[in-house]
Each structure stands twice: as structure tokens, then as C-alpha cells.
Image (cartoon, rainbow, N blue to C red; front, side):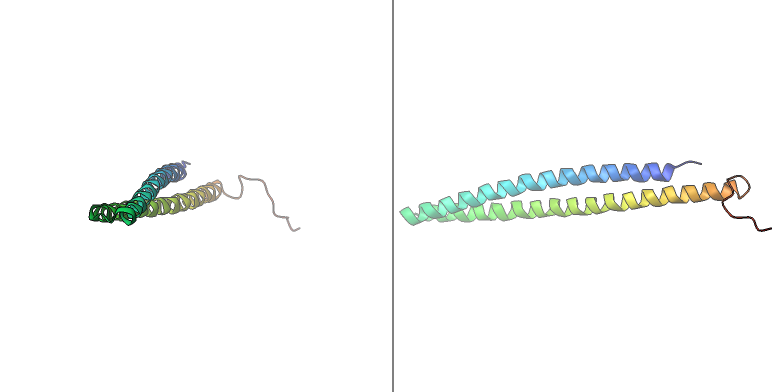
Length: 123
């Protein structure tokens, strides 16, 4: 009896969990970059209120636009992380089901005369 299905689904689970962790790490890095861009935009806005120079407004709008793009990328990585975590959970369930099917197949092939008798005999 081979348990190739169990080994394959466990491998898929480990790979999915690793990729999910990588996606979460990338999303966190992008979110911190977006926080920095927000602080930069707020600083440009504060500088504009002090000087009323129009170039600060343009730089503030550019930094907010960059922040929006970075946040969209972070959300895509976060969605990938969630999807891969769900795939890992499904692979765990599949590996358990393959294990149970393998045991059931062994019991079916072994037959009732090969194993220990658990039923009571009636005289």
C-alpha cells in the first residue's frame, strides 16, 4: 500500500503555507512603504500651509497617487496570502482523507480472517 496521495498533499500544504508566509511578508513591506508615503504627503501638505507654494501641492498629490498604487499592490499580495492559506488548510484535510482511504483499503484487502476477531461468537 502506498501513501503517495498523503505525501503529495502534505507537500502541497507545506508549499502553500510557505508561499502564504512570503505573500504576507511582502504585503507587510508594501504597507509600511505606503505609511511612509502617507507621512511624506502630510509633510508636503504642512509645508504648503506654511509657504503657499503650489509645487508642494503637486508633490503631495504625487505622493498620494504613489501611495494608492502601493496599497493596491499590498492588497493583491494579501489576497494571495489568504488564498494560499486556504489551499494549505484544504491540503491538510485532503491528506487526512487520503490517509483514511488508505487505511480503509488495507482493511478491505486484509479481510475478516486476517485480523483479530472483535465480534462475539454466538453458540
